[in-house]
Image (cartoon, rainbow, N blue to C red; front, top):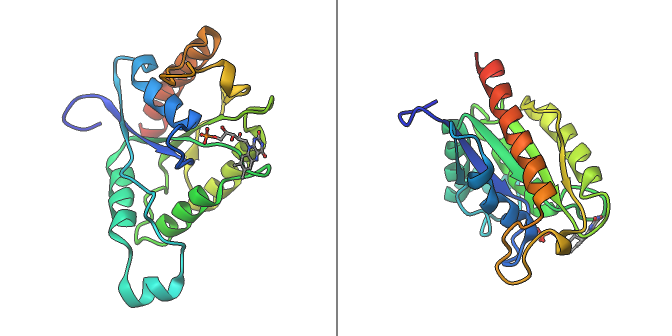
Length: 190
Ligand SMILES: Cc1cc2nc3c(=O)[nH]c(=O)nc-3n(C[C@H](O)[C@H](O)[C@H](O)COP(=O)(O)O)c2cc1C
């Protein structure tokens, strides 16, 4: 908890698409979060190069990677909303996690992390989330378990023009998850 007396979360999106449903979900979160939780978007990740240990050794970490690592370190928790690509974690997100995992005092260690996914399919990105959980094991993150948020059939859940999250059932479920995540952060952060 920092100066504002709230649990400060950083929201990271696994899609770079301008019309991303996952990004739209992240934008909806501040409205659905409990009063004591603040959610800020992570610094932009769209220009982070593909991970290359030679680049890291010769030029150090890209500024965007360090900015993201700092944002994660400073936050009380991280909320990741990501699509499922080919039954797994999108390369964009995996690449970012690979970079951040090499930073000194890797910021995901013991960091509470909450997962969400939106997809066009019925399973709502469940397969991606279980692969992401496995990655988070190696990073030593404290990944929140239930309730899980899998938003399937994305086109029916968001307004076609504004991308506002309009589906009441989904809004309810996400609200419940964020409340439970806040309680979890209190518990694990002691
Ligand atoms: C490369 C690629 C692979 C995809 N693979 C899956 C998949 O395995 N499962 C699924 O439910 N949807 C899959 N989709 C559809 C995405 O769920 C859908 O495009 C979603 O809207 C992407 O998230 P976004 O709106 O946040 O960009 C895939 C889409 C792309 C572009």
